[in-house]
Each structure stands twice: as C-alpha cells, then as structure tokens.
Image 1 (tube, rainbow, N blue to C red):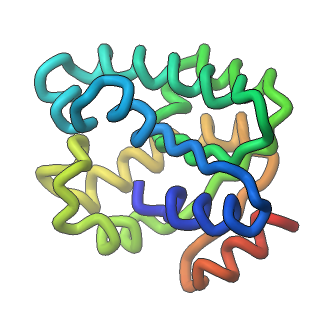
Image 2: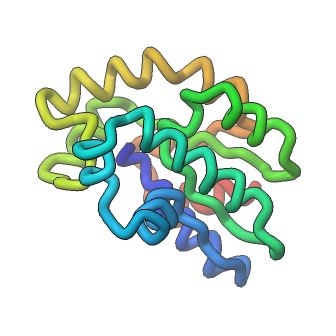
Length: 156
C-alpha cells in the first residue's frame, strides 16, 4: 500500500506496450463499487474472495500484461500458490513503512489504515514480509528512488 504499484506498473506497461491489470481497479469494475465500500458492507473476507478471483483472471489474461496486485493478495495461501504456479515474474516493491504512511495520508480508498497509518503499515509489513519473500522473484526497494529508477530496477 503506497509502494507505487499502480504508478510503476503503468510506466512499465507503457514502456513494454502491454496492458496494465490493476487488481483494485478490476475488483471495483467487477463489483460496481469501491474497495472501501466492499470492505464496509461485505467485510474483508468477502473482499479477499473477489481478490482471488481477480488475481486468477489477471494471471490467465490471454496476452502478456503487467499486473499491479494489491499488497494483501499474499494473505491467502491459494493466492500465493497462484502466483508461484504462474509464469509471471513477481516483484515486491518494498518500502519503509514510514515512507508508505507519508504517501497514503488522506487517501480515502484505503480501508485498512484509517486509525494510525504508520503503526498499521509497520504491522502489515511485519505480518506480510515473509509472504512477500515467499512469492517474489525480485525485491526492489523504492525508498529515495524516482519512478524511473524503480522501473529500471524492476526491468533488470
């Protein structure tokens, strides 16, 4: 959350001439409502089920694409299996939680960080880091790097 997945994904997709499949945008298009609305009305478990369906759809896309998968996608073992079993190159855009908190301040579409963004993001990092490592083919640190520098690192 806030690592630049969509921005970097868009830049890479443009550079490679491929479509960008953003999991949150795909979920919102499929459900006809925002991620926040889904969390609020249906709960996180229901959201995660839709997220799994969208991940499977993106990984099965008929043409080469860039996928910007939401950070929570690693929480479900079946999603980690989908990622592992795919031919996709999985890149973890890693950032310091303090930097992430600065980036996401005021973002109304992030339902999991309303109370204390920095503490929540630090806890999410601690909870998820091993799962990210499990699926990642590469880890790119985004701290103190421009979008272009991150793009170059991802494409190496």
